[in-house]
Length: 236
Image (cartoon, rainbow, N blue to C red; front, side, top):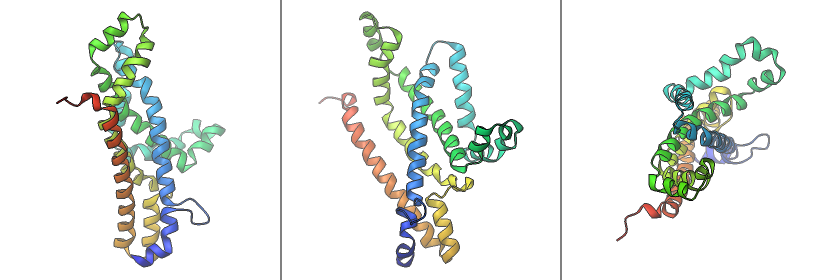
């Protein structure tokens, strides 16, 4: 283990002189996919929780497809499947986009986490107390104003525990990135194993990295929950 750390620690953790490390790539995939998924999930969750049957069922179909199929299959379809379509190869932008493994991986991760996040937020929107909404109506707030000032702030706070689980699951899901030749932590570990024939040390170091990042993320979310969900704790 010591020999591998001394020789490959830059490839695992920092900059190895030629390319970003596996940890940097992993964190970039995690943050970028979560950010895109979060932004897309806000309007989609509003539609999912709305009274409009067309919007509600359309979003349900999207979330059902991406939650009902493995992320690995989704990545293979986007990375390998879509590029076989003539319309993709004949369009300059699409051809350039889908030939890049990082782009395909980020798209697959973002759509997948968007589907799960949409359902999490939609459930939290439905859980907002009716009295809060009725009070907002009594003040004459328009529907969008109600969402901006009352419903979404309350729903996002209530969604913190469930969303923290989604973040951790997405961190673990980044291990699939090597399928699209993206040099994440697991790809680095596989390369180290190939070079040293020491799988226990190579993959064990990768496991420690994922465990450390998970520990930090859980700590951040626990602090956020104590701060923003204090109003839900029973008073003595």
